[in-house]
Amino acid sequence: MPKAAEIRRTLRRDGSLFLVVKEPVVNGERHTFIHELVAKMKDRGWRFCDELIWMMPNPLPRRAVGRLKDAFQRILHFTLSKKHVFYPDAVRQPAKPTNGQSKRFRTSVGGFKIDATNFEYGDTALPGNVLTCAHVSHSLLHDSAHPDQLASFFIRLATKEGDIVLDPFAGSGTTLVAAKRLSRRWVGYEVRQSAYHAAMSRLEHDSETAYWSETSGASD
Image 1: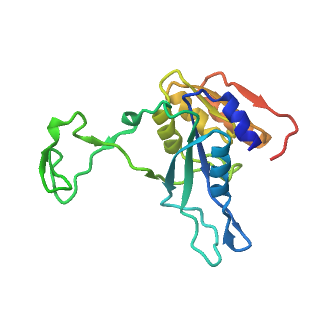
Image 2 (image 1 turned 45 degrees about the horizontal axis):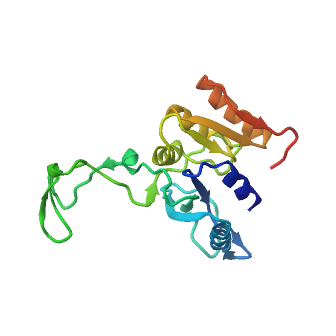
Image 3 (image 1 turned 60 degrees about the vertical axis):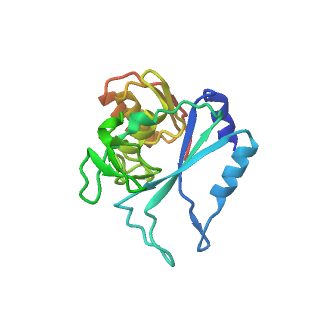
């Protein structure tokens, strides 16, 4: 909650906070801190806008006792205002007709035949709130690295070119690299020296000046 207070102080009134998190197992049972976190965030003025699921077709090979291995993580979307900026058309995906239907002519839920050419986005569709992409790590120094594809999705969804993307837990720099490639301004913080240097190596490869705060002597 102290970190959330600083994020709230920093965030634009129409901005978004996306928190990627997974409940750990403690004493053989799944912890409930996420439910408690949402309640505490709401008590402090945050809006719990949505919950998304990141499905991983290649979950980390970690042994699970009495349960199945983790193959998804939660993504909690918090905002400060009901009128937050949101660009769903920026993340539209190619439409995938089912049951042999053509892209042009489809059958609606009610059984009516629809000519998709009458719609502005006849060949694309909005994604749902379950996102599937492989777990990829650019650095063995960071055990919860996220794929570029995931970071890019949320950057496109909540910002436009020239907007600022802040990652206060930058790790190996995935979010910052994605922000740069999408022509956003970016700011990152990382307290672990090893992760900081790994991230800077990636960012310097993209030849852009970084805005960083390096905490000397800090530990994880």
